[in-house]
Length: 516
Image (cartoon, rainbow, N blue to C red; front, top):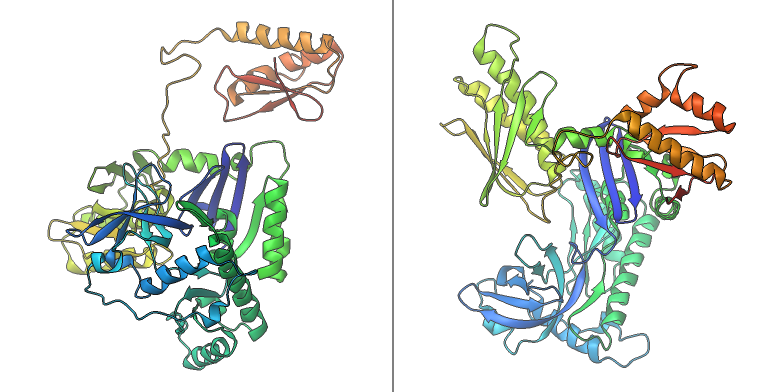
């Protein structure tokens, strides 16, 4: 499988598209002013205890108090409270030695929140789920700092190895290495990516996380809640950290700063892969060049079409998401059962992609085309499990019910990706009528004449593709050719799919937009 990461930087934020074999499977948005992202650490103040829910509401600076349930407290929450208090009041230069920190006894799993957070203390928390709709963030005290090969969990001395590493010899080797190099009071989980790695690589990754924990300790000094203590890495580096493997063959970025950051990061974690990062400066929008814009338009509507002619209908309710599978005009043979199975298998693959792409969470109910044979129903359930294996979110797939419905639960970490693919035409404001093309042509020429009078040279006019086709029609008789001959200047015409039909912009020879 070939994986490509396409990164589009814009003033309002960064869009990151993950392609698998040229097909869009994940789309991430990182806003400029992003806050309360999963993994961020905050110093919060407990505001209210709710014994009935066995939970607390914590002020972390969001407009609504964040939610912290007893089950998310961590067994080491007493140690976290003690550490938070000591770190805030610490006056030592460079901070106290965490390896000498005395860890408090663990709390019981069936305890009450009033016994632990009584007195409404300040507490170090980590964002578990981003704010969704009217709900504030969900918090956890099970602090974790993820690296490329290991994850550090403070206040314990446990060393665990990923279950996906099946070789018992390799598991023992990794366990011994980590036990030999890890400091006291920091637990370590060895990730799957650590398989086959040398001690030096693991040690370097661990040292960077220890330094991060020291930064947290420093940032807590004299901090007043609510306060952000540490931000999770940017989306770009976190995706590279979690996903980068031998399958990646291309990372393309249209921003010099992000390009440099990505290059530096890959140089550090995988020096042999630095050549896959490239800078895009081709003039046309990066998402258009890689066919992402078209895929987004096709994938985010209410109706999702598939190559065979079958299609999905995706509906959203307050409680769950519903997906209906329709065969359309697909008819391979006269065998109805076989047709239903083939359509359902194709739909299952697309549904698994849609869940990742839209980041749908909670309960998803899928109404597949009815099948009579039990072995076909099992084939479909097994296929769905297989297609969902690449999904990093926790999920569960239930067998098809007697009503022909499949239920899927998927971890909800952040608001779902919802892109409106239909909109009121900005050219006609929904009336269905626009000004004549002839008038538009005259308007462009009028502005062109004015700019040339102002001594502008090497002008580029950027327009909608339909308008581009009209202005370039004919070899000698095109409107563009006429303008070149009339003004005796080099005039370039470019098309941009993001423009509406009557939109046009002028650019100078440095590719800077000229404001009219």
